[in-house]
Amino acid sequence: MSGPILVGVMPGQRPVVLEQAAHVAASAGLPLVCAYADVTVYPVDGTMGGPAAPIDPDGVDDDSYKIPESLRQAIATQLDGSGIEWSVVQLAGEPARALAREAEDKGASMIVVGTREHKLAAALKELTAGSVARHLFHRQALPVLVVPVNPRVPIDDDDD
Image 1 (cartoon, rainbow, N blue to C red):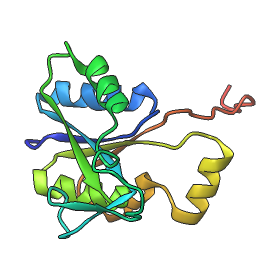
Image 2: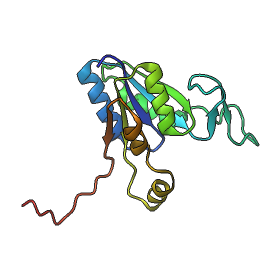
Image 3: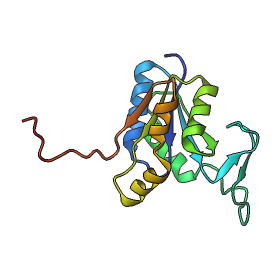
């Protein structure tokens, strides 16, 4: 592994995803790139680092599709003092595709994403759109680390 570790981040995400990505990056001596994919914008020229435009331009100001400051602060709070080199990038479009393109562009060694919460809205979204993790691990040549954010452990485990 020689390229950075790319981790998908989003507002309200459980800290365990970033924690695990930082652990992998630190263990491998690699930088960590925190990537926020904004689904409300699309890449105008098909590239992630290029210009982006809002899907619905009505009533949108220039600051509405930037990385939320609360997300930036949460990342900084969690990673400052960790001893690893890290950065935050904004991507545009569907998260799995955006992460895959960014991983290729950066020469990433691995992509790290979290699972969805066990909530009704998340279950409905997965039924209609599928999960980012599923899209990535079916279409990537890179390793994809999927971090469970709220694992369900059966109470009546028969392994006893």
